[in-house]
Length: 148
Image 1 (cartoon, helix red, strand yellow):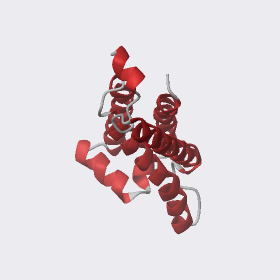
Image 2 (cartoon, one colour):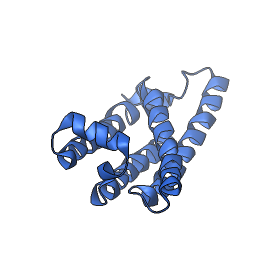
Image 3 (spheres, one colour):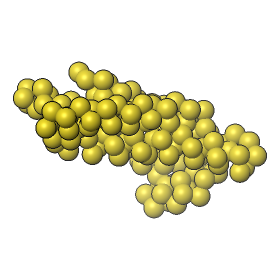
Image 4 (cartoon, helix red, strand yellow):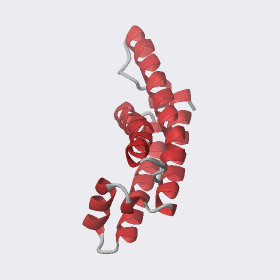
């Protein structure tokens, strides 16, 4: 398994921890976008929040075991998407806490997923540079593609 694949797996697990923190401290009560998404999925905001976050986790697991682990050409796009979202999480949650004047749900684990997202992005950039020098498809580890 490549470093990028391992980092992606840790990022998905980090997101699971992040979602649990947000659920345990009821993010949907304090962050309007979380309330809006939760309400769109269920009249019960907690249930809507759970549906959304379990879906995110299941999608992450699918991304890890299929496109990422198998080296699909789409794998870099999935990994970049996750990296960008988690880097944003690393800034948005602490920023929201500053605006609110205290802790808001998700802030503690934002300090996990943000740096993991940054490390994944850095690794993907390194791989892109190596692959470009070797004439390979951007971000795809040709060894993984050959094994599929």
